[in-house]
Amino acid sequence: MNNDISEVLFNEAQIEEAANRLGKQITKDYEGQKPLVLSVLKGAYLWTADVIRKIDLYVDLEFIKISSYHGGVSSSNEIALVTDVQSDVKGRDILILEDIVDTGQSLQFLEDLLLSRGANSVRVATLLDKKEGRKVDIKADYVGFDVRNEFVVGYGLDYKGLYRNLPYVGILKQEIYS
Ligand code: PRP
Image (cartoon, rainbow, N blue to C red; front, side, top):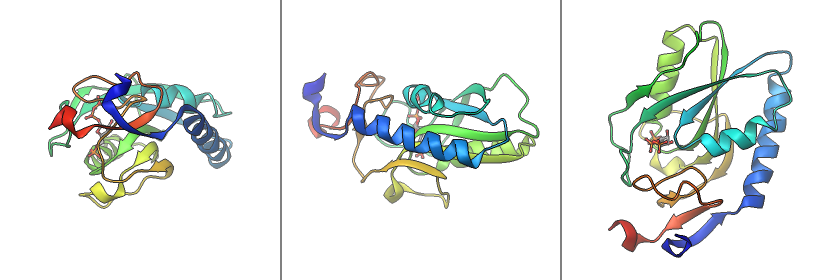
């Protein structure tokens, strides 16, 4: 599996440092509140596990599953809600945890959904921010790393369901998907 990667962009130590940095900032910003951490499956599962342990606050944890890439290399324009949250989001301060914000369409979809259900606030903490990919005008509140416009996998991010278990984020060799 490691041979399919052309370049490691962010290794385990760098990711841990980013989780620490964001966790500290989130702890500060949400002082006195009990945010609802909303992890976006599947990609954000590892990032969620790491960041949530760096947040020194009472938090609720929920999962939601949406789909946009359908296993490929580029985002489709259609977002589907696959598995919904289990609790009421009305009046809650929601912190979405994402592995990547690319076109921004998934995040826009989630924000619209949560606000339409009466969430008090919605922010996002993303491991990766691919600003060049944006199709909608939306910004991430907390960013682990900016990434250039390359297809990255690992640490939750997949290609056709694979590579999520790599402990780092790396660029997938073009020959694998072309
Ligand atoms: C990925 C990622 C984000 C979204 C970002 O999910 O986890 O949710 O795409 O892309 P966008 O900004 O262009 O909308 P994906 O649909 O691949 O599902 P997965 O997390 O289950 O792999």
